Amino acid sequence: MDDQVRRLRSRLEALSRGRAPPGVRYPAELRTEVVELAREAYGAGIGASAGAKQLGLPPGTITRWGRDVPRRRLRIGNTNDLRQRSLRPWVPSP
Image (cartoon, rainbow, N blue to C red; front, side, top):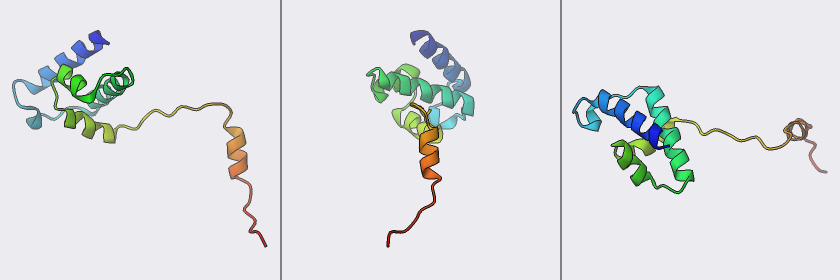
C-alpha cells in the first residue's frame, strides 16, 4: 500500500504545481483511486485524517470525493432466490 500512496501522492503533487488544493481540478479517475485507497486504509484501521495527511490532501476533500464514488457491492450466495421472491405478485390479505 505504501507504494500506491507514493505513486498517488506524486501524481497529486504534479497536478497541483505548488498551488493550494482548492485551486486544483483533479481528474475523476484520480479521485476514484484516492477514494478507493482511503476506503482500503479505513478498513485496515487507518483514520481518514492520517490517510489524507499521507496524500497531502485535506480530509474533507477525500470525504467529499467519496460521496461521488459508489461503493463496490458484495454479492453473497445465490441471488436468484431473492429475485424470484420479489417477483411474486402481491395479494392483499382479506
